[in-house]
Length: 531
Image (cartoon, rainbow, N blue to C red; front, side, top):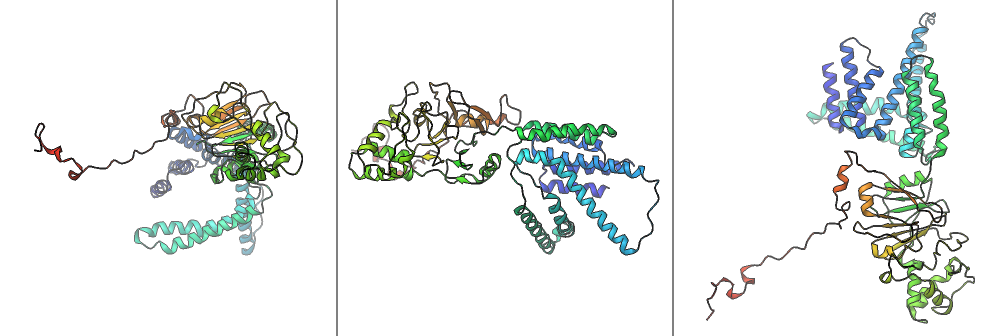
């Protein structure tokens, strides 16, 4: 027993002490201690002791996926084992089966082992499905078959050779054992990839928090009750399944650093404002919004706003106006005038007449002359909110220039991402949401229906999910971290961005002066002349 405790303590140390490892260590330690005193090892009491210890050490882990899924799976397995033990004890008076042949006994043991693995996978999978869908927006419908295929590899190649490799490591003889273990892990990953590629369902979108709470209540009744009171879990489980359909999906996501903004466009694609966004963040948002494709923004060279400004500021007939107007030829059907009238035709006169006059009158007001208390013009291809909406969004992606990115949400409201406050002021006249990647920005729009999110807000409260309300209403902003801070979030308020300070910039190194750089009279006493 002492050797087993020392072994699992060593594993906890080398594994990094994650919540799942802590729970396993505490559970095994309590079980081994119970066996020393001739007590039942696998009980809910031991699981409760493990939970209390983990919460005392890391209370913030309660809302994390590791704690919830680990203890949910263990509680379900303990409850299922207790129910099976009670049934087995009640049926112990029945007649024993007749003697079987050696081959029959072997076959029976194999079937019992396979059934045990299947039941374990089903019980643990059902107990953790909602928690996994809530945190990761995905499910694994083929997990039962995948686990049955992977468990023999883990049991025969991975774990035994891992133990032997760890034992041989002090003598420098671990290479052959870890080589076999590595091949076993590769085979296990191959099995997982094979089943993942054939899974009929993966991403499920956002899950309502009510479904998680109802699942937790159902799990408590199903695992802790020892009588027919277990049946009380059924109505809560049914309500949890029904609550899955009532999740409110945000319209816009904003990353914690304020650089990345994404929304689901009218084509069901994920439109982003960066050409090379963070892949982990994008994968999470794709699952949350059930989007398969990521749409990159229009580059500055292809930006409609930039060509609009070039055409309006260049003399008619010049090369710059001709080039800008040629780019706008294919976009004429997407533009609207100030009165909401669609511009027909297949071409725009090169650098003159229709294109230039329209862009000059409907182009955006220069940022230098903008003010939050003055009315602002809108981009030529993005009419004001009180203008009739366009027939559709033929180019449902962010349109970016050097200072801002603009997109129209399928609801008709406009989202703008800017680099500083100066560029954001000009968007107050037409945008519903303005994201400013600047912690020092302090602006407010005259219209009460415009929501502004700055880098400072994100530094203090984490990433944001935006629900765009109806035109005329202010969007609803939900941050990942709320105030007052929990003890494990208090450090957020001390970063430079959270204090409204610009990023730190290293001062340029000053050249060290040598004696040869000093003037000739620098080393003479005061009052002494060089004569």
